[in-house]
Length: 89
Image 1 (cartoon, rainbow, N blue to C red):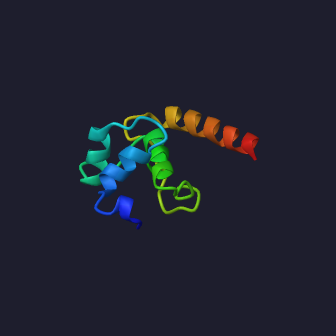
Image 2 (image 1 turned 60 degrees about the horizontal axis):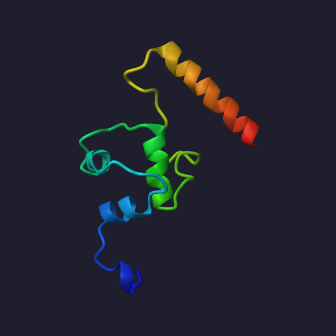
């Protein structure tokens, strides 16, 4: 690391480099392992901050159904996400 970033914590780095406003409380809960799941948007924001946006696509981070959603809500959302991703290709 260069001299300007020496001593910066991972937490502060992510907060400073996130492309969208990031809840410090949400990030703390993730980094301290208080939660095992998070929203796809928050995950994408954190991965963008650390320049690792491919972690979902290559399987290092698993995409699972929201445990609070019904199966039909998940299938509806996931189907829309797949459709949007196919259109972007």
